[in-house]
Length: 358
Ligand code: TRP
Image 1 (cartoon, rainbow, N blue to C red):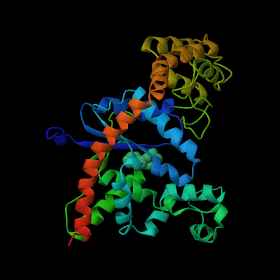
Image 2 (image 1 turned 30 degrees about the vertical axis):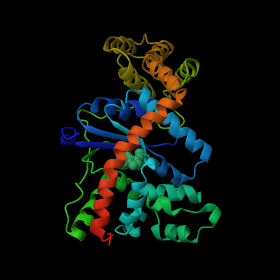
Image 3 (image 1 turned 135 degrees about the horizontal axis):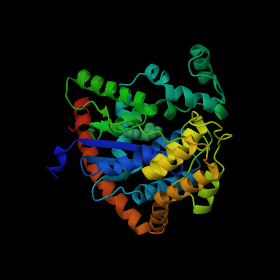
């Protein structure tokens, strides 16, 4: 344990809002798997964060289980990393209350993710930058059937607590979460300086080095994302997966040698580069360059190569989902490890803030 503590602490969470797709796999999960040996890793399922969008209770419960199974099937190892469910750590909820006393509603209201989600909750479209005053007015005046809940507003506090309660040093997150991480750093500094303590390290975003992986979707533009409907899920069966790939958007095909590549085709090549061998990629690049390429062949190859990655994961997911005993064991030991550290930090926070025994 003491040698383990010398390693840097890496923590990341994922909201339990749906199945994991190839973008999650290459963008995050496959990297988490590699990090397990070099860092003191904590990976968790952010089910309390998922509650901010008021999911159906059955769906929430089922999602926690399926994401956990997908995490494990993709190679996260409970013997190496601490894997847990956020709501299993009650210390997080208590510290969330305490930290909120040092968080401004103004800074929360200005957070981009809040504005986006509040707009969605109110059924508004449009950019997050226009007319803040009218927007704030709408939030305050909203009827209960179209309301912006306080959990949505304090989402960054909860995320900061996830990170600070474990005193994490490095947080691997996507671009969309960097603002939350910046707030976490600010809250840590503020707490330390308000109480004149040096309790929280300022967490940094984890830089994987190299160029960032782009995992495009199948609809011709943009990245793969569950809200975009252009996803290949890790648990898609062979038939579904092949069908999705064969339906991917393409173009008319090159008519002149060495033509530039359009975005839909560049996206298919990007997926091929992630999943295939360099030789196969080169073969299709050459065929594109001399106009002999047939997109049907490219897609068939792509589907096969993606299946080579996803099939073993899907099979393990199914085995794990059928083994409640194993899942319970993994979560019990993850929660125990995560709670031990969280309880220690919470005790320090309470002491510092003046909540003390007589
Ligand atoms: N907000 C993150 C997301 O939507 C999930 C998350 C919750 C998280 N708590 C975290 C990520 C702590 C990193 C660290 O992706």
